Length: 253
Ligand code: PGA
Image 1: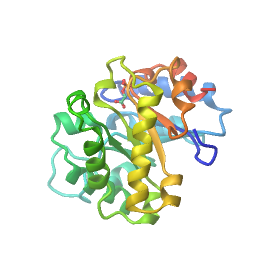
Image 2: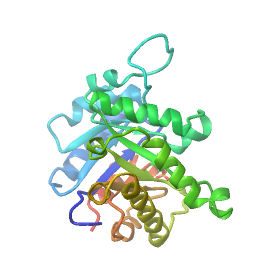
Image 3: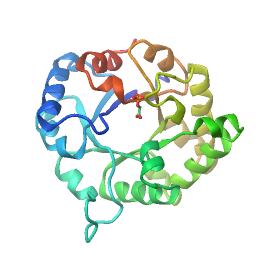
Image 4: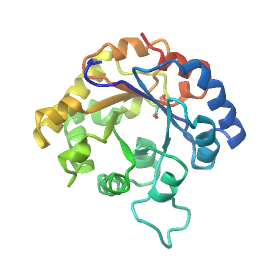
């Protein structure tokens, strides 16, 4: 954590919670985090619960995120959701390029980049996800993969827009597995990402960029991760599905 960057803790609910369950989860969370002022709190329910959660968190210190979107404005794209639809429901953020989308739904650096650009054009703040698989890490490709995902994902994005972007480093081998990267391992990659952004833009942009860690973050390990100089927040799956554990993450010391 670095004093100049406001920590951002986001819950990625993935394909969990009906709208009734989502409303209950959000409602139970509000009183547990209502006094928090020095960090940003974001909830990412599935599309079908965005409206319900949006209504519940209105006027609180919690922001709303979607988990994906399409890069076109509108049209014959059955099953897809546009940026405008997300804005209409009160979303401020959108998670883009999550490794599950890259792995199971064919997302590439190119489509991820189109989505990031469309989100920015429309006024949504992208949470751009990057991360290597275990095979890539063990094959010595970590740096190459991260640099490719960062350079590709940020292609053609101006320095002014970089202030609206959050990057989430999520090693694929740590997601939902209970295997967290050690704080040192995570920080090493965060520093690499910051270095890359500095090379693509300039130091001031890299210094201001918030980089979240994601992958089996829990109330038990969050403090040691957040103590690292280049870790500015967490993108949390499993531990965001219960109000007490997500509140404990938000309230890390
Ligand atoms: P996890 O998921 O916290 O359940 O590992 C993180 C993520 O995929 O965003």
